[in-house]
Image (cartoon, rainbow, N blue to C red; front, side, top):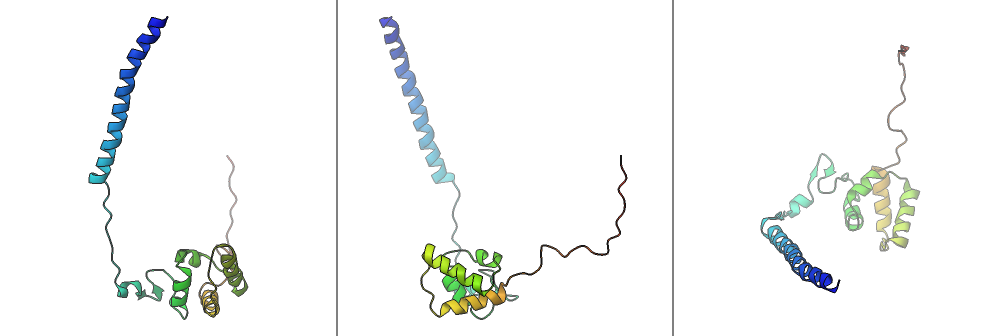
Length: 149
């Protein structure tokens, strides 16, 4: 019995070494392949004129509507989150102010001072609450009976 265990150890050690060598080779060759053949990151430089470009009343870089207070919103809001978060939300003055207070209390937003009024005025004017649903209700429909099987 003792002899069988010794034989198992003798066979196990070379197999373990081979498996370890293969595994290590895969890691090394994989890392080299990524370094030499992996995706290349290209740099895109935005000129100052590009970062402030307005087309058809929309600030191109952020997608926000051009209006009074736009730059204040960009400076204070898009520092922490995407402008898409602003665009998808529609709130009234009270809700925007409550959201700002929540961000100040829980998310580390700094005191906005007089900028808060500028920001809330911009948001309520350009991203107000929508009163309609997803589509207008159906009217004047000529319904027809469905025939059974």
